[in-house]
Length: 212
Image (cartoon, rainbow, N blue to C red; front, side, top):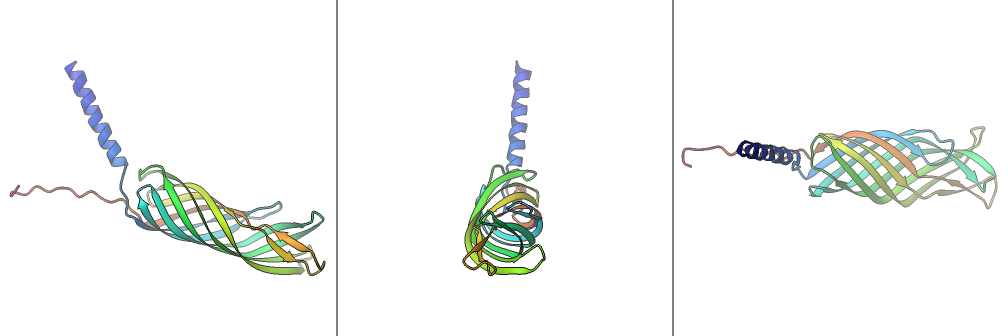
């Protein structure tokens, strides 16, 4: 019984040490830098590119708040007006400034899954053309929107999926006075990047001195 007890005791000590080592503490300030692809809502769409920067502060080890600035470029959308006429719509630019929050499920440096979200302002510019590439209308909008995301971090790298809930833009149709063209602005973003700061806090080793 004694050898078995000692083995269990040693196993418990090792397991506890490994668990303590996995649950690291991290520095509160960091900045995420991400790139990726964006897929707008609606049929007939084509993927575009996006770039984002997001400074953050960890109010708790498992909760970080931040401010996301993101731009998506070269996004094409497909619009339908009253279910009758169809247009090609080029979303030349979409910029957004959002307050964000991320919740991390672990404090393991090698793998930290998270969920998050945010809300703020979206600045969109839409140019509507017909099948002959003739410009029919152009509009800019500033609207309130929201974002939900999931992903994970591993060491200083970050990967995630984000869906942006952005209201439609109603564009006056100059060819048909009194009617509008509804252009969808919501989009799904696939991101990969890294973050600066936010590294693991190294534990200070106690050094023995003769005075002790």
